[in-house]
Length: 122
Image (cartoon, rainbow, N blue to C red; front, side, top):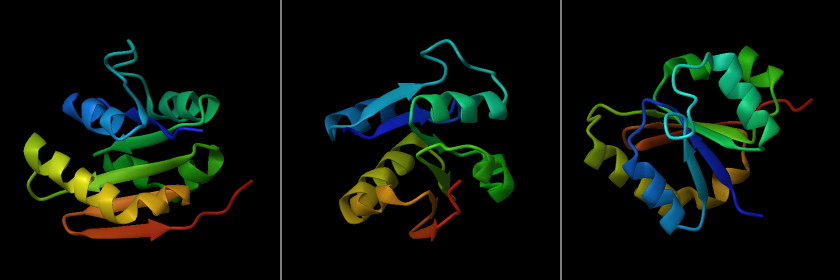
């Protein structure tokens, strides 16, 4: 089964092509008509559709909220250089090096560091 990603509205559309070219399914909140929804609704949508969330929003760092939903996982991107080109290069490097980590529950990409959190499952 292919890994599915929901891109938060603060991520570039170009990320859709990058992920799809690597064999993943990718949807963007704005492109599916869900721009501006609350974080709880994002969690519910991804839980229902067994998706990962990719976001730049530090609010998704909340372990308590994360444990309340059964989303596949979260990739939180925290980069100093936040331009689209830098973000795409970072995601490409991440997928090349850490693709096997997509079985984990949460990943945070900070510049050149990837922090991985194992979280409890319900």
